[in-house]
Image 1 (tube, each protein chain N blue to C red):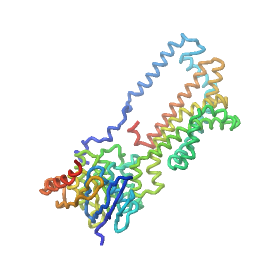
Image 2: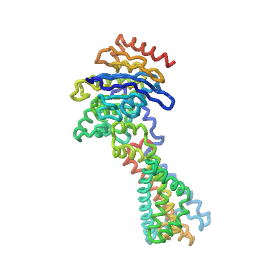
Image 3: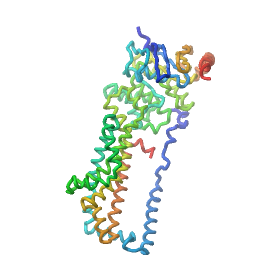
Image 4: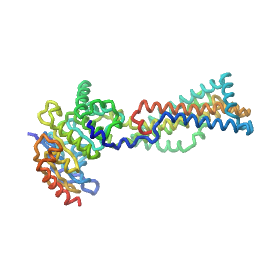
Length: 261
Length: 271
C-alpha cells in the first residue's frame, strides 16, 4: 500500500523528568512536503532526529517504508541548520560525501556531484572551501549533498533558520523550484521525495508545505494539521499573493499564540 | 548564486584574522632587528668585553667558526638529534593523543602517567636519560629531545580529538559513515590544527632539550660549543651557536607554518 513513506506512531521522548513530546502521530506521504511548525524548544528537531534514528525514542516508533527506524537509512537524507559542511573539504568533496558513502561507483558519484552542484546554482564554485562561501551558498552545498543521494525522504532541520531574511527567501524559492521542477530530483522518479521541513517561521511553512503540523510548546503535542490549499507550482511571491495566505497565517498565529505568550 | 544573495553579509567573513599579512610586514620585522643590532653595536664598547661583545665581533667569530669547520660539524650533530627526537615525539605524541582522546580506557590508563611526567621539569630527567642510554652516541640526546617534545604534541592531539564538532559527528552518522571514513573525513582533519599547534610548541621545548642534553650528556654539538667558549671567556664565539639555535627555532616554526598552509588550507582564515 504504502504511499505513506514515513509513519510516526505514538512517539514520546523525555529528557530526564522533562517530557519533550508524547503520543505523537504523524504520517508523510510520497511527494508531499509536511512542515512542522512550532515554538523554539518544542522538540521539533528532536522529532526529526528520531525520524532518522539519530536519537532513540522513549515511546512509540517511527516507520519508514513500513520498517521500524533504528538508525540512519540509505534512502533518507538530512539537511542541517548548522549546514554541517566539512571545512576541510571543497564544495565538490562535500557534495560527494553522502553519495560516496552510499557506495556508488566513481563515475556515478562524479556525474551526480556535477549535476546537483549545477542544480543548486553553484557551478564554478566546485573548488571553493566552505569558508570562502556565504551562508546561503554554504546551505546550497548542504542541500546538494542531500539531494545527490536522490533520497526517498528529505529531512530538513530548520535549514534556512540561521540565514538572513533575504537569503532565506531566495533559498525558499530555490527549494520550491528544485522540488517542483522537472530538473531532476529523484532521477526517473514520478513523484518528488517526501519532505519533512522543520521551521518556526509561519510564512516559510505556508510557502513550502502541502500540510502544516502546528505543534504546541512542551510537552509538545500536535495542535492541528492544516492543509495548504495553494496550488503548485509555487513561488514564495505567488503564495504570499494567494488569497488563502493571510487566512492561513492568521490561523497559525492564533494556534501558536495561545502558548507562546 | 543571485546578486541579492551575494550582497547579503555572512557571519563567516567576520571571523577573518585580525592581522592579515601585508607586504610591509617584513620591512618592519627586519627593521626592528636592525635597530636592535645598531643600538647593541654602539653601546657594547662601553661594557666589559668579557660580558658583552658587539654584533660585529660576533659576526667575525661566526665567519671564523665556519672557516675552521667547527660550526658545521656541531650543527650536523645537534640537528641530527633534534630532527630524530622531534620525529619520534610526533609519532608517539600523535598516536597516544589519538588513542587517549578517543577511548576512555586509554585515557584513564595513561593520563596519570602523562600528568606526572609533564609536571616534572623535563630537565630533571636528563641525567636519568644519560644513564639509561649509557651516555653513548646520539641515542640519549635523541631521547632527551623526544621527551621535551612529546607532551605538547600528545596533549594537543588529545584535545583536538576530543573537541571534534559534535554537529559534524552527527552529520557523519546521518550519512551512514563507516568507522574508517569517520577518522579520515572528520576526526583527523578536525584535530590537525591542534596537532600542528602542538608541534609548534614542541619545537621551542625540543631545542631546549637538545642544548641541555649536550651540556650534560654528550658534550658535543652546539651546546658543547657554548660551554667550551664560555669557559674560556670567548663571548663572541659563545654567541654564535646561541644565534644559530635561535635561527633554527625560527626556521622550524616557519616550516610548520608552511606545512599548515599546505595540509590545512582552510585554516588560513583563522591565524
